[in-house]
Image (cartoon, rainbow, N blue to C red; front, side, top):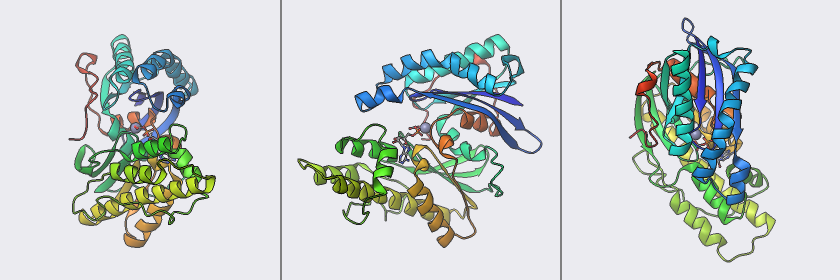
Length: 341
Ligand code: KG4
Ligand code: ZN
């Protein structure tokens, strides 16, 4: 089955093509094109939804064409269209959803509606020839992106239970807001990661909110305020900025790891899956892998390649393949608030 996927939930415009093998339950990536309007948002220090959507209207057709070319296929080779219908920015979602509906109508091919957060989880199911391990259920997924921080239990494909999430800022949002306080460019996650390499993560004692709470919730807005108090009206040296970045990053990572381990123990999972832009953070990857190996030696941890952690359409194709519910184009709509709960 050849699936064309379309993802436009935030500022990226992405199209991908995968080949799904039903017998082996395997997804092979044929192409994954991502265009971003990030340089425009760097100027404004964040995404202006209207600006993002207008750029996506320009990019969507060229990006689909490039995905087809790279896969050496044409539109008639496509069996199914998968599209992110939510959650996300309404203007951005509409660009992808209306394009997908039009293609579905013209080509007379079914369409599958995909939740963006499921997409982040399913980035882990794209076949990686270098990875010998197999994802076994039950699995726990930690989704950490610019808009979301969620822990979910996956009992099997299509059977997902939400365990907890952030009560205020998402992990990526905290990186971006702290970046703003430190006058760093947007998106600040990768910049803070880089500056942290030279910083002392023990220098500032930032809080780890809710780290010992009995639920699986997170809260990062207090952490952001603690950083604000530290930097307010101060002219920071380069090394002080690096120390703040490293200490802040460590506070986020410690909290994410503590809750992930706790949920994995409680639900006796066999695999842990990471997803979302923050999962591209090398320090998080290293630290969580070490902790899981130490505390839960029988549990396998999976983290997608960097380009599959941030928003992309390959993960949308893959989520559609493993949760195949085909629909008519008439029954698909953008749903910006399609959260887990
Ligand atoms: O998943 P994503 O591409 O878009 C959303 O669905 O939100 O995530 C983007 C978020 C941004 O907040 C960005 O700062 C953060 O992921 N991010 C990182 C890193 N790369 C991206 N955060 C920490 N370290 C990184 N290396
Ligand atoms: Zn995302």
